[in-house]
Image 1 (cartoon, rainbow, N blue to C red):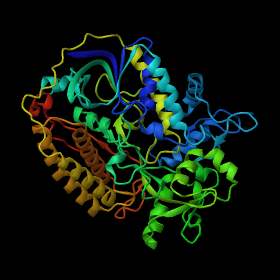
Image 2: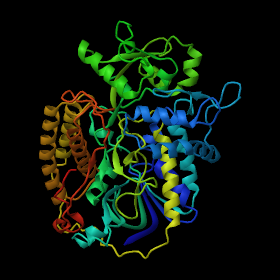
Image 3: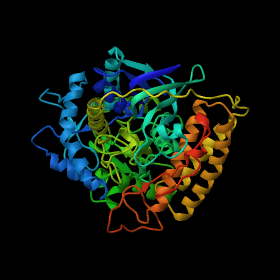
Image 4: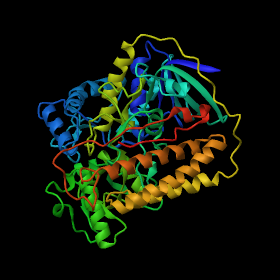
Length: 549
């Protein structure tokens, strides 16, 4: 049985939910979520959304702050578009029912400030903005009769016209996305979904690293699927490591929001000495890449397991009001942040690169869109400015919606169903767990905050060995959620390392000991796949040949 929809959206974070709501009044939508619809990186976002709505700030200042943080690689036209659309995005969320935090005297919205911003322009819901936004939009999604929600489903691969043809089409026959194969985790069956338009909104790939602030679902699925389908990816070397992840044996991936530093939190060594003034004139409010490298430097220099973020000099009532989520979680772990500093370490947080798109979210493949962290739109450049990520989700979902709604309906193409006739059940799934753990550990050690040619070469060698093993596993056994995620993580890891090898300088989030200087020209790193589709073996086949840049 083939399921048919006007729009297939893979991913249920802010980008996916927004796009669904923007098109569902006139389109039949299928929203695919790996777990529950609320389980996304968007839901974990603590800080807020950057937007200029008052006379004390300016759109030009927001643009300038974004360009500075992006270290010369931001697309200026895209940056201008996003900053200009920020007000509209905030107002739309308010219309949907999001209650942003207001001033104590109710004179207006309380705006906070984060690293890299020259003004207070962060609209937030206490310290749990993403969760509040996600819950509000989820309610709207569940109420809409035109939206079919598939929870606990994971996309296996995209279906394209080139894959079906098993050969490269002629120049006048562009590759088109026709839908996707999707695994129902409950039944173990792969279903076929045909779609007029498909949008990848699967988030980032933080789980490729041993330490990350991301949820378990952040396995780079959209980037890997788009690459296998023939899309270019860009700037994958720019992985943002958030400076302050809670360091505690019982705390898994808990972020200490940048707003803590924005509201006066100070980074200190174990003896209470501050160290940021010796690293940057902006001190604790320097952009994330600078702060993360400073912490990494101090930890390695002094042999520390962590450093400390101290906000205890602020009144207890202020801390409890502005950081209720952080206060509660730390207290559960025996840390009273009104009296004690918070132990923190850097952790993988955000992928600034991804699937290349235009200003409407369109990829290299017709009828395929990428939005949110999955995409490389040109907004973030070499380093994302804090609180621009949720904003990007909103602006590009709106742009993609306009593009989708402007296109006429086309006849559906008859798609083949998933073929499992030549595979069996896996005999040793423990191999998946072992490979996953090995990948995450050597990516952390070799492709982390500070890189060298030797480390990158070792990482690439290990990736190719593991990729061959996983390819054999994937070819012979039925797919599972863990196998799909591991396959995607290995692909994304390869793209990160290849991009890092290509960049012979240190810029933004990419710092190389072998190339410590900044080149005069800022050039994005673009990887282009070359796929021989004659090698594909039915719906279970693999593109084997890739070429890089």
